[in-house]
Amino acid sequence: MSRAGGRANDELRPVVIVPNYLNYAEGSVLITMGNTRVLCAATIEEKVPAWLEGTGRGWITAEYALLPRSTHTRTPRESDTGRLQGRTQEIRRLIGRSLRTALNLGQLGERTVIVDCDVIQADGGTRTAAVTGGYVALVLALNKLIQQRMVSPQALQNAIAAVSVGMVNGVPLLDLDYHEDSHADVDINVVMTATGHYVEIQGTAERRPFRREEFDLLLGLAGRGIQQLFEHQKAVLGDLPGIAASTRG
Image (cartoon, rainbow, N blue to C red; front, top):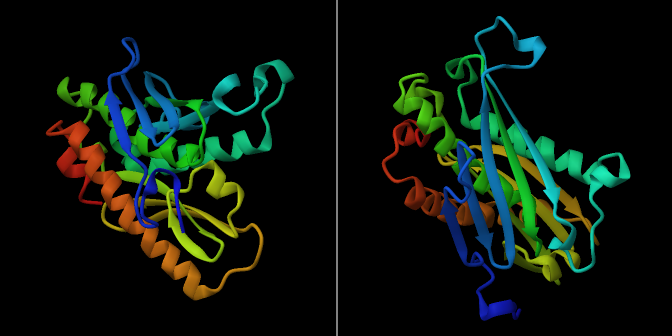
């Protein structure tokens, strides 16, 4: 089927990861996937939630938000409504769970890393872009502690990236944009480690139930796309301390 930009069914949208996009965050990136743009910023706090105090373990949490004009029509700020939408809570938890897999929290010490993911422009795949960019922001932030010998490089144990796949009019597609996502028969978000282990799979039959062989086909497609995303991450992170450890899985 014909796709925007003429890309192949198994082709990612153009990916750009700009590191250190913000001056003040310990780690930050602007990740662009096609017309989707997400700003990810990592903050390190020298404290943990009360239930972790005295354990010597750290914690990672994430926040996610759409800027009002990141969408085709204005999305009201959730702070104005007084409550988070269920979708926002779900995505925050997905990002947090995924990024916690990246670290050995016992090596972090009693610190909390907060990764804020703000969608500047949404054209499908915002949650998966937030995971992929959020990991880079996390590593950039932790690298500063590693350089100061406050944290061991072994704290970084898994590289993490994510992508969406789906069936649209019976055709398997990688990295769905908004138009494709809104017309998908099946929509699946996949988070993986660089060693090929699955962190999370969110799959939904949007228009029709799907077969096991279709599911396997889409997982294979996602895995190939995610391996390309790891190459983009490595190109940004280069030889920072901890990267070798993080890619062992």
